[in-house]
Length: 445
Image (spheres, rainbow, N blue to C red):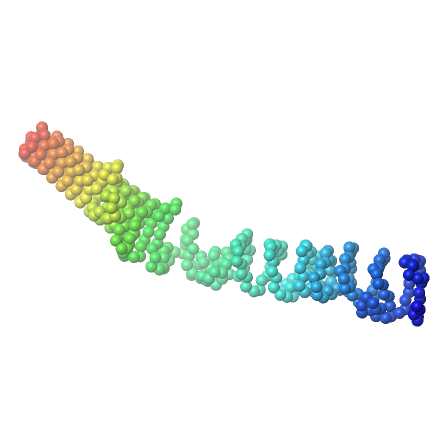
């Protein structure tokens, strides 16, 4: 059948038309679907050359472009999911929701000095799941919250916080070096020494009711208490290292020590005073003790395995005075007084002894109620009791003798085991370890 204004070429057996000329149609019918317009092709169209479309192009199916596509007038894609690979955009581009699985390179080098300019302008927020590397400067006008660990290799400059600002702001070196170190705002303690330390107004210490503690090599080496209940005042490497400081039982409280390892092991002991290198070093429970001098009472222990404070009332003043046995657990003497170089040095469990003078009662271990005054007085006494000596070398050899009285230089110097002897005078002597004898006068015997 024929249709008006229609050219029919052949019949349905003609499947292909080759033409060396151009197909020109002056029909200007617009197309709104695949069945309207000046040119309607029911099947597909293969075009080997360039295609120019003066109007809009509507594609209802999937479009695959394998070559380079240049869009000089822009590209608008509405709706659906669109996959675009290798897109080069030379002008301004506005994108709604866009998912990019590949690498996006922006070659535009426009600098940015505000949120509204630059090679990439994002009006809303930006979520970045991976690392962000910025080669240039970064200006942030709002607050910045960082939830993870942040490492800053260097901070060249920034806004210095106000003087004495104790907030969580990041301090610049200008704040630390200038503001904090300023005499007007308190000093940072310098390892090279501090200047302008005005007496009476500048100090090293605390301003609240907390103790001031010192450590050397990770070891407690000093404590100055505010609390009168604890009342500890110690200074020196390891001084007061082990004190209990119990505010209920008062064990380990009110100790005063100055010196390397002074009262180092004191735990239950309280109200002790130690001054000197290793003074009261091994004391554990001993209380009410005074030790002054190099290793004075350094081996005192006074502990029987129970939680208690053992009141000793021992007083030792002098180099190794009342130092005690090298086995600290053997030392439990009490009410002893030793004044002088190595006075009562070997003391273990003796009590109520008084030794005054260089090496006076040096060897005494178990003896009690002895009084010796003078250089080497009662030097050899170990377990003798109730002896009274006044004078250098008096009763020097006495070891176990009891109840002897010797007054004068070298009196009864040879007696070792005799008891209840009395000698008065220079070199007065009672020999033979006898008992109940008396010698009065110069060299009397």
